[in-house]
View 1 (tube, rainbow, N blue to C red):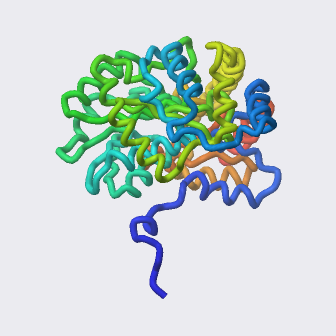
View 2: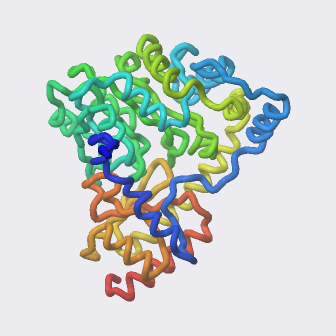
Length: 391
């Protein structure tokens, strides 16, 4: 029998996160700090709106674009929170931000087109590019620069085949953010080289130290060359609802919706009704989001202090809900460290190289867990480091 799996699929590596947590799933009494999923319930009013839609039999397909009322609410939200101006025919509702990434790449890439991928970053970008027969080109960021993309690093990676840049801020796994002054320098390079920017802003509501998220689409000259990706999973604790959106230039969004309509049809109706409730009346769920952000901030500060006190140098994240400490002092690779920590101490974190080669000698720890779990894990980690002579 012939080999039915396409070669470009067969050569894709498994997710570095899922591969590791397949091992975790076989073990008992493990404190897992690996999954980037809020530990808070979805706000009650959102759940009630979805339940009500089911009880009323509102279970039919929506427009391919998404429900008009939801797109209106997203438009108001983007203006209110991030000063972004989008009409409803520039906004597409998707199956999470993950589909928004995929469908945008499907629409814009021809075989051989290069896409710049800022790393360390989310594990799905490079495979999504490869599946469209594009070529991912890594741009490495550094801890000494706060893991912020530098214009000279971007410039050095551009070739005549470069078509787009994926800009992942606030960043998973580092927690880095880009401020307006940083984005202005990046925008200048993108305009000069006529690049499309795919701006993954799924953690936009989760920023700290009094710094609010700034979208590159708000920089002069960038709205017409940027597709903003966002969703409800992280900010509104709606991971299982699988609802995201993309917003961008009108003609490009028409083409993206055309591809979306063929492969997906539309986002789930009950999720859309819930999201309408999340965004309606301007600030209805702001208090819920703010409470979650405050709890994350407390956990963030605890972890950074604890890790640095153990000698695991930890960059202070200003966004998302991850810390990315260095484990270089142990002399182990990220994979070796995580496996040893798991088997010896019963604590699971993610090897940094899962997020690109530049993540080696780091690990990702999520603080989307209770303070009690985090404290228990840090006690176990400290004992583990002492037993191995690293403290």
